[in-house]
Image (cartoon, rainbow, N blue to C red):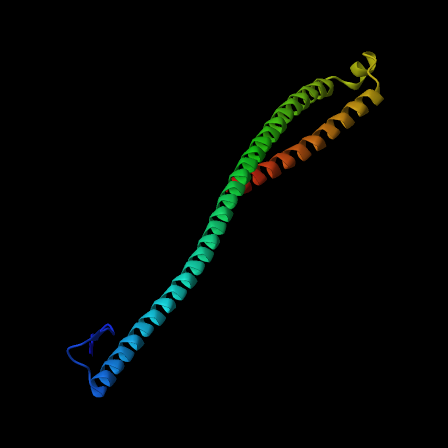
Amino acid sequence: EAQSENGSTNGATELTREELEQRIQERTKELEKVNQEISATQENIKTTATERLSIQQELKKLNANISQLKLNIHADEIKIQKLSLEVQSLTLDVGDLEISMQDKGVAIRAAMQELQKGEDESFLISFLKNVKLADSVLAAQALADLNTQLTVDINNLRGLRERLRTKLG
């Protein structure tokens, strides 16, 4: 009986040894080809899995970078708010110093006017008014102290203005 390609026997014809060998070799080649395709497919699966892990790692890195950038932006926003508050504080300090300088300027002008009045009067009239020399010396010292403090305040005001310009600049 003859065998068909699937291995069943057929009574009509039998294959010769040479034909069997040829078919065996064909099947062997076909099997090798399929095994190569299987190997290539498995290699492709491994490569895809490795690529997937690489992509996941890269995605984690990108997400970490995004989080860090968001935190940096938030920190910068807080720094800006802090600097804004510092500018407001310095502006208030400058305003307070200007008011203090104006008050001291008024006091110095008043003291200078009193001294001028005193200089216009003669020593005898001052003596007759019972103005003591010690009071005049104390008034002059107070005026000098006020002038010194005003100079210090002016220098402080200049320093504050410079700091304000630097922080704004």
